[in-house]
Image 1 (cartoon, rainbow, N blue to C red):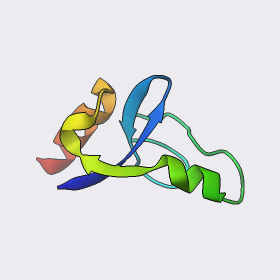
Image 2: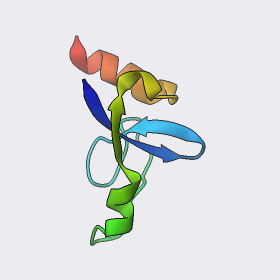
Image 3: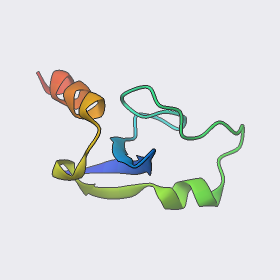
Image 4: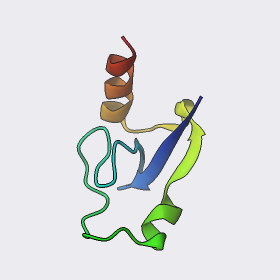
Length: 63
């Protein structure tokens, strides 16, 4: 299964919504989303996630 991921602070996070990651990190703070921000989001396998908080949140959602 593919998930939307973004790299911030040298870690790969799971995108939760338009403004934040699953661990609570804010990656987009502008009112209008820009093309540059959308280009940062990649859809890859879940095994690529390096943020432990994001990975644990995802596992908790599946239960």
